[in-house]
Length: 211
Image (cartoon, rainbow, N blue to C red; front, top):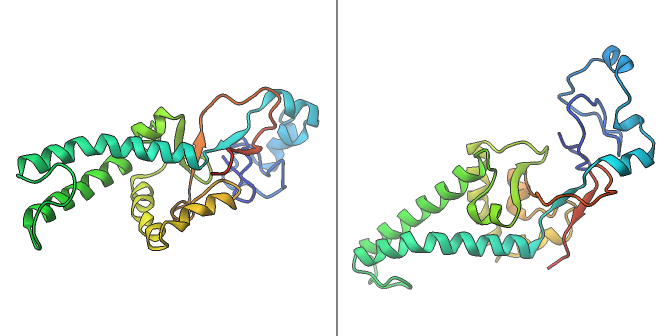
């Protein structure tokens, strides 16, 4: 699990965060069991922490932008085929005002994009094809797999970011876990699955360079 206060990873059996001391909900052991259990990360010397754990990396702007562009490229082909079959230009707006063909294609595109994102982000893979190809997965703030409802909420929460003229993306520059406005609204984070460098502190927040 991840600490809800500072984002540090901790075993499910650990009652409190080793970095900030916040209590961790969902601990599986009682206090009596902890007294008899082997020394955990909270009891280890700093030197031991450096040798055996991996840091949590959060995806930065450019990695996420590249994944977004790749996913949109993949979605372009089925929508382009649908537009061609309906006698519309493959790119751009080709119908007149109130053209039902454009409305139909637009609704189909929204449905396809929503299911493409929500189904994959809530799957065991944890991300869309574009996200996974760039070594990312989407989790909740405790590192758990998303439900379909939360993944859908994250997708539609992007409307909040668009309503701010996309400035909601700039929140990545100030949030510790590189979250955008719609990430914060849905309680999600993008975790980089690259192997952690040796000597990393467990649960340390490491994020990529700012855009």
